Image (cartoon, rainbow, N blue to C red; front, side):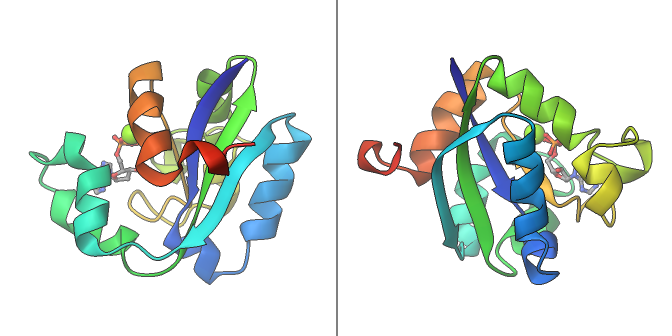
Length: 137
Ligand code: DAT
Ligand code: MG
């Protein structure tokens, strides 16, 4: 069993499609072991996306992530990290494969509806950034 970290981003929460995305997650066999709806400050978003601090889109990305409530999730399944990346689809919804969440719900490269850890190292940073051990069940 492996755990990964997922976010339902502000564009999706704002459009009331949280339930539709959770349905896709559960239908794919993930167990939701942690879940909460939160509103990040821009500083908290900057800490989360620290790996992208040198990128030209960092400021815009962090403002967007703090622009409205998000739903943060810890998901468990065999090969959860790769499995969730594959269910999400490519970063740009225009490039995402048919049947993926970003293809179905994403609005643009920036407003692409969901986040997922890209490696075990990322998951090990991202899950405890949002959840303590009592919140993972
Ligand atoms: P992913 O979310 O697929 O892991 P990433 O880690 O490369 O993609 O980038 C994080 C987020 O930043 C991504 O979901 C959307 C945004 N982003 C990526 N590249 C961008 C770009 N060239 N312009 C604007 N936003 C971008
Ligand atoms: Mg990433």
